[in-house]
Length: 205
Image (spheres, rainbow, N blue to C red):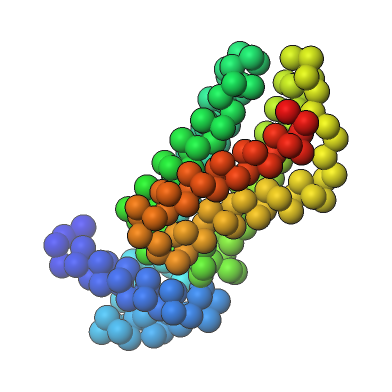
């Protein structure tokens, strides 16, 4: 891609971010995006086949990075010996949250698109996907506690889903509202303490 094409592509991306953030994916107008950069729709299709493909170009990498970071933290934790899992459960979850937080602040507009403007795309259920992964990991951790001889109390599935969903929404609210990073890090630390204590209480640990 030559320099002129690269500059045009960057203009498309900047205009698209503005349109998607203001209106959301479903209400955003591809025609408006194209018009704002002074090109024809036909010329736009030389870069992307559709509005959906354009949106994916803006957020696909960020979605993959966040999800891969989250999944890797789960895998690394479950690779530990059972006794170590019990001792450092909170440390692993905290490290993952801070990694995602820093990454999101380095890619703030793209992550806000994921969180606020992705309804109608394949990315709209990112938080729900994370919730399901966390629920499954929680159940596997309960199995570990059972094998260690300190079984968890039974947790009502509906309550479990509500609490885990609330945890993720609480975390991502920091990014949505663009809290100063220093404040966001402090809030994550406090949030971790709150949820860790709560889960230990519910699990009888």
